[in-house]
Image 1: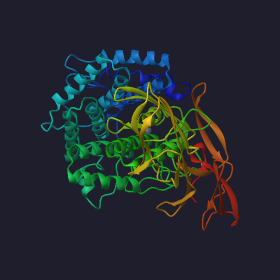
Image 2: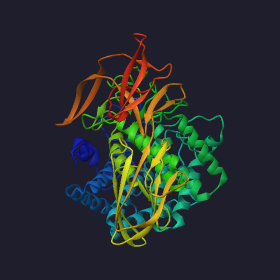
Image 3: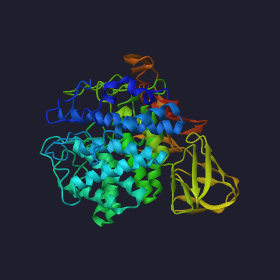
Image 4: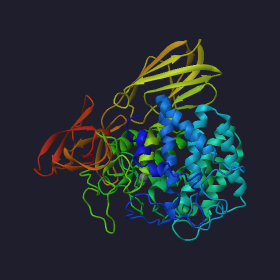
Length: 588
Ligand SMILES: [Zn+2]
């Protein structure tokens, strides 16, 4: 692993190797940690800085190990194994695996990271268990989750009780439902889902600084999303799990309302407001930014919804975030991502397109391998986004149905009725729309292959006999031990309008943008090859789409006829995939 995902522990070692789960557990008078940041514009105060290193290191390890597995990187896996052993050695005899000393744990009246520090750690442990099937790791997780369920008994405790101050860490802790949902999927034991439902209802009933997902906020028709963006999007998952566990019609209705509110906050590239409080606003291509953490959290929430509902529209939402907003926030030239980014990006010198913000020295709009001057949250999450996308690319629907839920070049190795099956999905997607599913099995085998049909498909080209059902292409036949399915999708340029009546051009899964030439400036260098980079434009030309732009797709680009707002004349402009750009105009 050559980029920042493989090296973050060397760029910010004191954050990653803080022994916060072991010898450095937090005690009554523990001081806030010095994270090396500017603390500019933080609402949270010092309490959140006590638990913060648990999130940073656990999210980084989570992404690091999943990438190591995908890459078959043995050296990285050996490092992961050592880390897992170290972490497991910190577990107390009663199962406690977390960041607090004995006289603090489970007894909070205000901001804390009890459940959140566990969530970020256990998600990684579960990933490692799913890969290794190591019973030692599994038993440790079961004991650790049991410890939580014993200390905060279901329906008879109040884990989300806090006083009226900021409680971001407590609110993050609601995503402990990620752990519970996965435990349920592995064991089939309903107690985990019922505990997740309890957590959601308890969170809903308490006072919090992150109100968006609370049932009373959702059912209040006048309410507008206002919380810290990343909380709002990660909290979609607990609501999904609660709604699907209970089957309760009010929770189901609440889920629908919450999804439409999130949609209102999301741009056409999948970037949902996260700069950092939503504050009742709706999405805007130029004036409202999104945080990399939010991209990962919202994408992950949609994968859960895709899994639980089967609704292919959520597959489109996942692909939109991953192939557009997320790639468009990554530096194509250097290893680094933008902490904050806007769809239209006219400069990346720290501020949002040059706007000054009152009371804040904004430095988030730049590319960095760590963003330590703000917070090392986005880079660990950027390490998670690709493996989280890929792990949801294939799903199972019943014993003998395999589902290509997200389209991507992947290799699936699985079993169908105990027979090993490998499917190699060979494709240049999302840059091309043709697929060859190469199937290998020890002998002839019958199963159903379901392929999600994206919403932009005009026609399906294949020699296979298929049925179209609920947005999926169903191929139900006997497969030879060496077999192929060739399929391709025909599409055309789509012209979309956002809620501000600005025009976007898409082709297939990709949004296209006019790249703006720029000069780059180097900022802080963390290590050779790992620096902050900032960009100023070479031109301030803007284009507008006032009438038919005669859009034409040509060899991976889109040609459009637009008004040059400086000259007042129409010009042909060549748009490229949004994910390849640094500075750009994408809405016209
Ligand atoms: Zn972040």
